[in-house]
Image 1 (tube, rainbow, N blue to C red):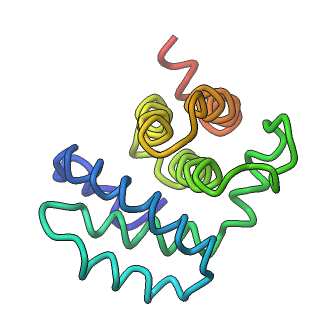
Image 2 (image 1 turned 60 degrees about the vertical axis):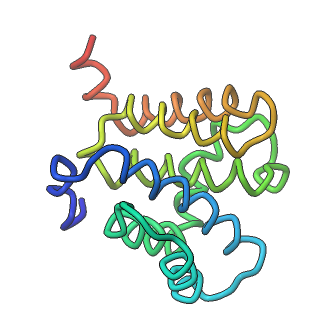
Length: 152
């Protein structure tokens, strides 16, 4: 997993939530504009003050943009439509969820799914949170089966 994975307990939840909110927006901008990810990150750091988990933001933004194809491949079998038909917000949120489920095992799968549902409610179309929930639930059963069974 990641070198910063151990910092989760030290990071206030509100700071991580703010970072995820910015992450959805930054990934959306990256998908639409194809500007360099470093320029987008610099813009978000300059435009946003306050208590934000910048370490997580940097790590996730960099990893998701670099591995977007493999992240997409991980959840594509759970889609009921072609990936090209997803709107950019749904795609961004699914990439965040896929990244966290596969690379951030320090974040419980239920937290990953819940956070992505909340992002979809905030940024997505009506009822997109239900779609996000269904896709990530299937993905979690593949990637986090041991964790899910341990909770049962």
